[in-house]
Length: 121
Image (cartoon, rainbow, N blue to C red):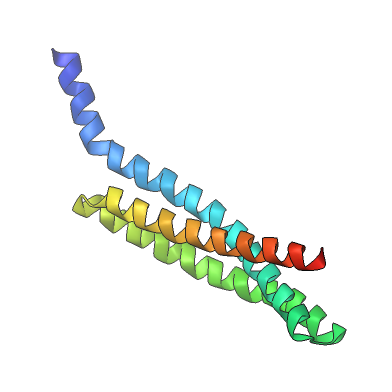
């Protein structure tokens, strides 16, 4: 019985912290994917609008830097959001909310990519 109580105590104490850390790492990695998708989305939109090649190259280079900075800020905010959720006992809802937002963004990127590829034919 002593071992069971030890496991339950450990699980109750450390599981939320481990869960927010692992989810934060996973969402941060997906965030890199989203940054690259945003860059691609803006490059595709620049081509569709008819922007010249010099501006297109600038969007490609500076867009990546700008979106990477946004990603760093988002990672810091996400860590605080998930950690406070773990402390308040609302981690599950917050993980689901962030997962839905990231899934929606990835769906948008893949949808635009699919339309772009159909247009190229």
